[in-house]
Amino acid sequence: MRKKARRYAPIYLMALPALLYLLINNYIPMGGMVIAFKNYQYNKGIWGSSWSGFKNFEFLFKTNDAWTITRNTILYNLAFILLDTIMAITLAILLNEIRSKKMKKFYQTVMLLPYLLSMVIVSYLVYGFLSPDQGYVNKTILAALKSDGQNWYARAGIWPFVLVFVHMWVIVGYNSIIYFSTLVGIDRSFYEAADVDGASMWQKICFITIPNLKPTMVTMCLLSIGRIFYSDFGLFYQVPLNSGALYDVTSTIDTYVYRGLMQSSNVGMSSAAGVYQSLVGFMLVLFANWIVNKISRENALF
Image (cartoon, rainbow, N blue to C red; front, side, top):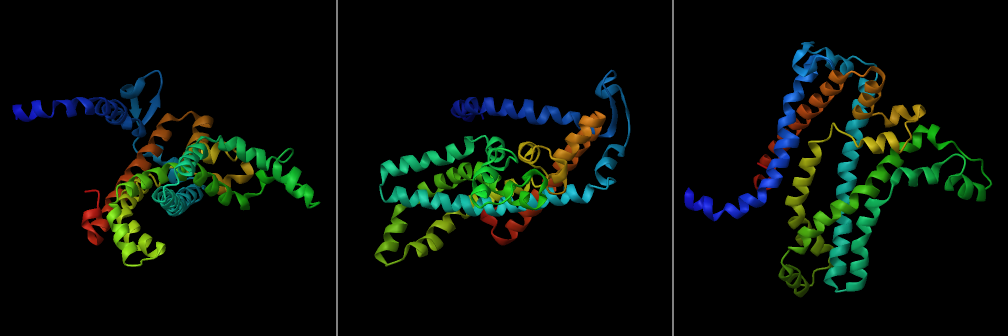
């Protein structure tokens, strides 16, 4: 044991900052979960506040909006998982094809695109297009068609598409880099052998690229499933500008809890929502991993 400790000491040292980060930010705060079961009062603190049982959870389950916020949270995340995976893999394959053809200058330019996409301040961008007064859609497109401008922040029907598009705009670039790094590690001799056999580009993608991407795809999807009861607060609160007319299609568990917290300052309620999301996410990961184990054991997380 001592010899192994000395041998792996540099690796343990390298892992130390990450382990400390996990301990301080992920594990120590778990003690605060008791707030979800208490009538929290600032002057008494966590341990001095009285117990309230499951009353804090009633806010989520007894409200008239419980079905709406749960439906929106789940359906949006399912759409994100499906479309983000398809688009990220598509972009990664395009980058890999460009790299394989040694188009270096073009390849270096294209590699910057995911970062540029992710760095755009999307809420400002969306407002710039959809602003009722000065938006590009009303002032340029509809004006050219001699059509009246619309108050897009009161038209709920378009926002599921807007939110999905904005999410893809932000996240697909990052995910494509993860898939691209997997593609870079594929042995090029597989493709060379396929070329000798006369395989088309589509056949190489179906029988070489996709199978090699499968473990990464499963891992990314399992991690996404674990957060299926969470939502991007900025996307669902800031991008639609917290418009009341859009609550039916933009309200998720996170935004609903935030609005309730701002109105009632009930910290216990907010903590209960976090506990609920974490427990459900944890169970979903276990269930999804169990399914993967049954289908393809080598691709499961554990």
